Amino acid sequence: MEILKGLDPMLQTFWYIAIPVSVFFLIQTILTFIGSGGADGLEADFAGDLDEVEAPFQLFSLRNLINFLLGFSWSGISLYDRIENKAILVFMSVIVGTAFVAVFFVIVKQILKLAENNSFTLKDTLYKTATVYLRIPGQMSGKGKVQVSAKGSIHEIDAITDQEAIESGAIVRIVKITGDNLLHVERI
Image (cartoon, rainbow, N blue to C red; front, side, top):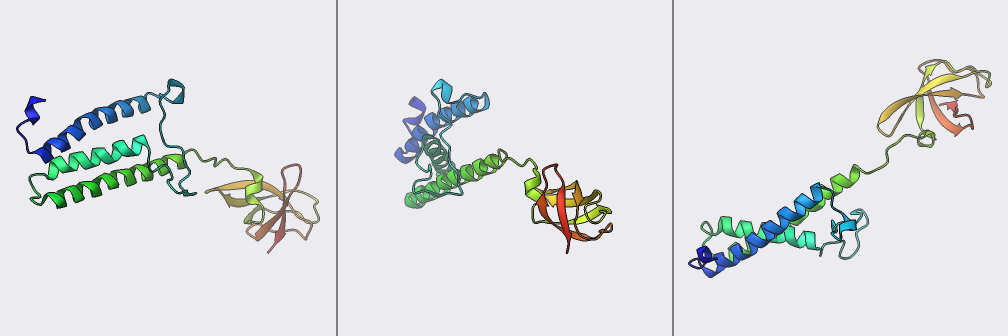
């Protein structure tokens, strides 16, 4: 690389880090988007639940090293002419590289939330309060309907009670789920 020969040694170092890391990052990104996975011998390098933090929690991985070096080298190149003190330049580059890794963790945590199972089951309503939508006949002599909020949405579900009849608009607590997908409710 003849172009880099006339540069200051520190700037040369930043460039020698930036070029191969950027190429590797581009290849890694392309392979990620085309769906290359463990079957090809390539690993996405992030498989951890960030809620259960273990000692290294995947901090020292190839992907994080690439992210750090990407932020470190390009910030060093960008700030080289603006920061005269080279120790401060290296310190700022380390801060930016660390920020790249932190942003990666935040992005991956948000992506992992997309994989959560948010499908609704009747068990999600147990012991919750609900509003009677259609009158519930008393003494389990018929069905009514309740509206209950579960997993971020409102559901209308058939309900029965062994108490007196419960009028529309009353607040009830779901105390049991019967075998035929009926909610057993009690007036609050």
